[in-house]
Image (cartoon, rainbow, N blue to C red; front, side):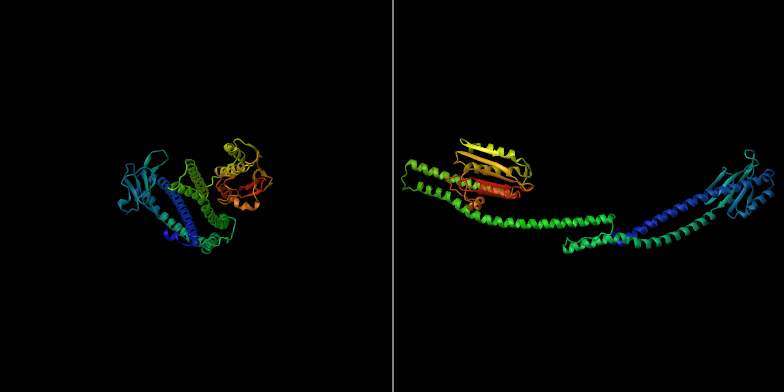
Length: 475
């Protein structure tokens, strides 16, 4: 079986066709010979039984009157039946009265009659027929006949020769047909194999296998070509993703460089505060009154708190690059309302009007989108603090069939559009810390989340006329 497994497909197909044809022919011939053998056995029994009835009827007088001469002449007529090897007549007492051939050895004849009927035994067909004048009348004796099976063997040899000739002729025809028919199966398979080899050697997924029909092999060819098309599409998509990831990596490197510069600057400021006032407090020559010492300590604490806030924001910002998105359909209306309610402490003692237009749901990570809304609404509340009545508007622009553009608008202090690019950088601030608190990480976090959702964010503003932040999410 191992050798057959490695045999070429053409030879396998031819071998299967020839073996199948041969087996079918052999089974057919075996069935035919078996049927003929069974038929012949029945015919032989019937023929010998008829002959027995005739001989028994002719022997009635000879047996009844114990005329051995007549009985011998009657049995001698069996010379015309060359397959009869032995025959005898038994009298009423079951003794052999006459036999044929007369010089045959006693072993050929049963010593006593056996039950009437014909049967096969020891390679012969034997039978016992009652010798009666009329059926049902008194029995005068019994006739025994024994026939050899040579006629049956001759017929079997004849049929065997015929079957052999048929098998040989049919095998030759099957071989010639299999050579022609196997090409119809092997050609599409070989075409598929050649295409697969070409793809494997050259890694060219643009090649396609030739379709030679609409049968199962044609369906297989279509499926194979469809698979190649999908692989080609996946490769193109993979190459696109590689280019995108490369661009993202380059952007991240640029961002990291700017981040390191900004971090060094922003972290150094509270460190200088802490170090400076700590040196003053530790100077043994300094004679500080208690209220000055307390103020210095408070400024040291404020500086350490500012540094702690910066570090926490940095940690949260760095985690965004590793956190997996858990996308689902998000109800933005409900999410904005929840975030606005959570920011109640930032609205305490102020008059704030929220205008929330109906928003279409979006596909995204609800936890990360909450971070986006918290930062945008918190900024809107913070930079509209100088207004006696703050107005915050949340809505979506009429984009038709395009991607919806969401916006958060406030009537706060605004900013100069020439500084808009600085908004989304880490530690980039457009206002002094003594004017508005913050670490400069919030909008950088917002931009990273929007980027991970396949969208983009930008801002429009004028000094002292408020600001509007627009963003999109991939559909």
